[in-house]
Length: 385
Ligand SMILES: C[S@@+](CC[C@H](N)C(=O)[O-])C[C@H]1O[C@@H](n2cnc3c(N)ncnc32)[C@H](O)[C@@H]1O
Image (cartoon, rainbow, N blue to C red):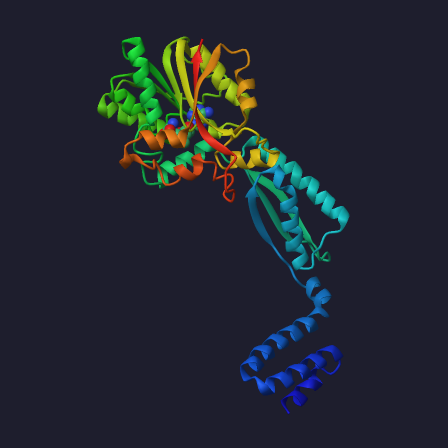
């Protein structure tokens, strides 16, 4: 009975009428199923009917919005796919020529933004074209991200301690070794000192420490603590990679650079750090730094490298490291996994240093789904010859 009443409404569509009749038969024996099938079939009927009106609907649909995505050129195909899906959904599909044009504009901006900073964000804005056009008009720009902005923001919003409450075990071990060798307190430079996690424990041992830091919120904190505690700390506000940054030549017994090369862009910047260390370390002095090293046999793709920069885990291969050291009066004398060393040597109450340390130092921020990440943070000790 019911079915006969409804059929005339869809009488013009044979296929739909067949579907409706079939479900009516099932429904007489299975009540529950009747309800489910009824609504599912009605939905599909409605959708199929609506298909007829899509051209009209699309002409009268207007979309506007904004998307922000990391400025990584290696993601170009993914971004194109997402944009195409979005515009297809609303019947605003681009022709192949329009797609090519969009792709080349998008790629140009991604490359430009990424060159400026791996923290840049691509901004894609779209809105309805002016009538009588029914398409969309888009603009592509990017915002420039900076490490100092992000760390200033961390300092303003995150609960301290930001990088852990204890000095690195490796730093304290090396400083003690050098003191023993020298027979006096070493003179130390802490490059990218942050909040002074290493600077202050070293200074409290009585060692003279120059704390070099580029984030204003941190240099203020460093200065305030050094002054309050009257510690032998000299805060130097600068970027170690700035060619104008000059430190005292052949002055230091130990240079430490912890959790900083993960912000570098490439092996050239690593070389700059090493070359500068050769200028300001005394002969026989040591440079201790940590870096995300690619496991033997793993060659990072351009995509891997770009993502690693975004994740503050810049990857270096051993070839990168050897190129960076080429012809410098410096040699590698030790290389250890940071996680293993720190976990075994820090007091239990200091482990883990932060909630993110274990995942970050094992490369999981870059490769969250991998069973075995192909990178890991390593302690590298270099000796100034
Ligand atoms: C993850 S924090 C580590 C801080 C400290 N070394 C520690 O281990 O607790 C990285 C620090 O390096 C600083 N930094 C990064 N690149 C730098 C550069 N090129 N020159 C000076 N400081 C830099 C950042 O501002 C930030 O304070």
